[in-house]
Image 1 (cartoon, rainbow, N blue to C red):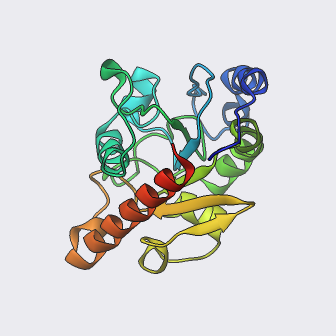
Image 2: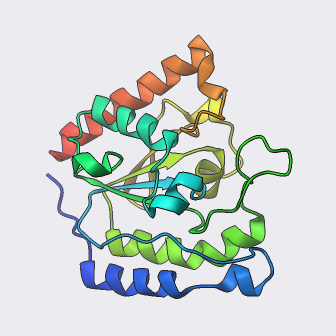
Length: 210
């Protein structure tokens, strides 16, 4: 049975600071800072992606685009219940976040979105660290290679997807990027690894009675 609880007042103060942040704009990394924040609430699962996409930037909801539909499918397959119908990416136990809080823009090649730079990730890093402490989740889900490597080091998705890790007493589950741009999950072998990750996540949810 889970005993962790989100510090909602601390999370609310953090989100206010994130909403007011323009560090990347001041540093010349973005033309305009527009951080994504949500209403604070208790959550037992923290999902960490790479960066907001264009739909997230427009709607103001993390994982609001195609990547969110894939993520929701994984979580619902693991037995988590859907949240509000008009905000389908949300599931009742999940708090959605990312390494950086502003949409980085399109890639120079025009193929998908630009990955945030190391400096952008560094500037947002303290926010993520405090968010992790404030939410205090039982489970951390890492979506995409950048998020995976932020927590697990210089690893390959091939070697970690479909496995359970423990970091600072929390269960950690790596997944590939959930957007349609990623082709990692197209092979039968990698689809099997994703299915195994979902089953491990289901087992953890049942163990914690989430």
